[in-house]
Image (cartoon, rainbow, N blue to C red):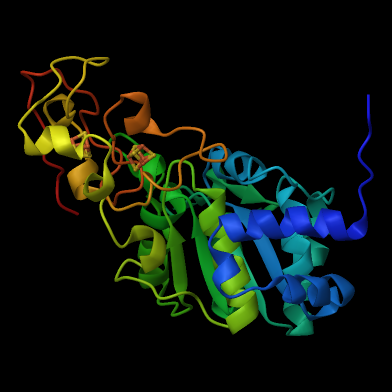
Length: 311
Ligand code: SF4
Ligand code: SF4
């Protein structure tokens, strides 16, 4: 079998293709990548912590394109600590974070999952509660990226029956009176393209991309799923599926595409291999403020809770 030689330039070309796929090719050129590769010290610090989460957003992040996400990020950012990717544990984590805070170097905090404030001991990071870390770290961060729906809005960790008092970052920063700008990247899980684009934008411009009132980048969350749905023509013709697997718009099966903002029809999951509606399943609104709803799945004649509750 012929083996293709991988040169530094060909590796960087693959990294650039992955960057362009996130949309960041609009402000990063191949020359910028060459320069960042030669001088990565200019990179912004990124500190990634887990609140109450399932780690799905990290798994999603690792699935980006055909180059390791670390290869993309390390050219433009310095990952100080990542809960799953770093080797540090216990006191080493405390030392790493303390060192960053004492250095007074600028950093972007990334939080995956929510912050349990009623039962803070249910979420510990290196011997301390996530709540106490957040009170210390969040005010010092230049910006905070809420990675995924739980971090943005509370998501699954805030659904009915959960007693931990978990809060998404928007609610938490209001509750604690912290004014650090929050960039929310909802999605269950978060799309890796959204994260890479946002970090590269911050590292290049020193500011987040334009955001909506919930802190979501307008580029990705400016339109509803319904606006660009593959079944939009069926909707217009009042042609509705009566059960999963049939042709037709999925509205009568509880589709939340009309009230859910995301670019799912353009950027799917697993390198855009597929996404709910293209696979014939209703949108369950996983990037919405109201996710998860009390009744998530509907039959054609069951319209209970089909219109989301208000927050
Ligand atoms: S399937 Fe959902 S998102 Fe698609 S057209 Fe129907 S209601 Fe809209
Ligand atoms: S189509 Fe809806 S449920 Fe599916 S990933 Fe997009 S926002 Fe989430």
